[in-house]
Amino acid sequence: MIIAVDSSFAQHLHVNPHEVAEQDLNDAQAWSVHLIGDFMVVMNNQLAVPVIVRHPQRFNDSRSFIAGFKREFLRLMEAASLPHAKIRLIRDDQLATVQFTYLMTPAIERQLKKCEEMLTGTGALIDWDEQPNNTEIALQLADKLQVMDPQLEDTVPVMDMLEKYSLDEFHLPAHPAFNEQNRRYLYHDESLVDITSAVAVSQLFLTDYQKYLAKRQRNDQVIDRDKDIATEYCSYCEARGLSPLDDLTLPYYYLLHYEEITEENISDAEAKAIVAALSDFGHFMHDQHFFADEDFDNFIQAAGQGLEDRHSPQYLFRLQQLLHNMQEELTRQRQSLGRSRSMAKKRLRVRAVLKGYRPTMWREFEVGGDTRLDKLCFQVLASFGATGDHLFELHIGEKVYQLPFNRGKQSGEALTTHWLGEFNPGDEFVLEYDFGDSWTFTITVEKETTLRRLQNNRHAYLLDGYGSGIIEDIGGTSGLMQAAEDDPTINHEIDLKVKQSQWGEQIARLQHRYE
View 1 (spheres, one colour):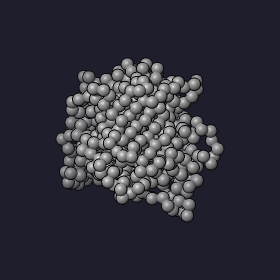
View 2: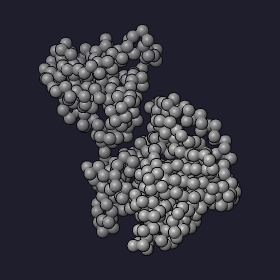
View 3: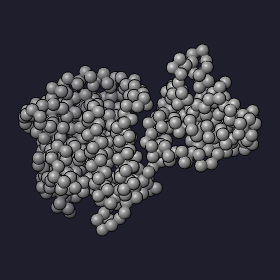
């Protein structure tokens, strides 16, 4: 840790600051001190996290100053949205060594000036009548501060940057005890930064997890819930380039951001069900000797804390930000919610055929009427083995439907604003994937049924199919037919049980590719 102080405060602390390279100050381990009357703001140079310490005059040496800063720093970390294990890792990393310097960057000086204005200026934001403690003051300052995220090339809220720092820089790995039972797994080492390995590990976990659930004689509803949550959780890990072994604290972030990840609003009861499903997955990992006793405890603690922190001020503040930043999206969702609900009782049988391929390669599946058109596209593409490396669009009559773009002009309607239940048996769609190879799928709504009361409409089921699927970048259907001359396994009936077990994972993975 490098701490920049002015000369008068350095003399007060009886420290002799050393010169450091300017680039060392643009680091998450560099801090700067600013005195404002009876307050001292110690701000992180890279993250702009402010730590408030009162009555700086009573710290008359470096040891007492570091003790006071450490106390307030840890209190702020505990109030932030961070799992307890990450706080310990950050503390040990930040406070391993301490060095003082005089240098202060212009950017951090501007941030400290903002803090001074918010604390004592004419438009001060602190409600002193509430007699806030140091942590409450720091959080109020942090709520109003933005910091530049070099990856996004844009400013983000300070506490979001702190969370990103904790996610990216600190991992709490499991310590699997390899034996004959689990040796076949590919262990993903985070130092490889290889997302392919993370995906391979997750695939093996999920395949064996399904067998594990079947042996435990749970009812179908619990098994479906556990499989879905485990698949979503592994996809969340994969999106970060990690396997479930690489960071035992990820259940915390997964649960805290569940609504953003899945675009679903959930109740407290549903959140508790997710924790129960994660607990079952943790038991499986422990049973397979991938989690030691301590690993299992850390995994369960992270999930439990994630559930608890959903009611924290920081979580509520994040929801307010999300509401503000996505007001248009939320308005659209409210307008279309009634239509989605009216379709929730529909079940539709759909047939998808790879156009131009001989013999006919096809899939047939059943889904709910409240399946959004983007999810329908993911279901079709996943069933034919598409990897999601290319763009796609859906044609219905003369209309073109696309995924909404973050930037640029949208040339078609948004897939996310329409549902399959808007259509009737006999309606036909054309899905085009990879505008180079031009894989084209004809999708037909074949049959509609109505759910009986209490039936679950959440799941999609593969019913039948033929052919192994497409091969990316092979030249489209003509290239696939040439490949089939040398590989007869391309043209065969699908193993429905195996395909169904993998389908949900493949759909989730495709969805993450396009987010």
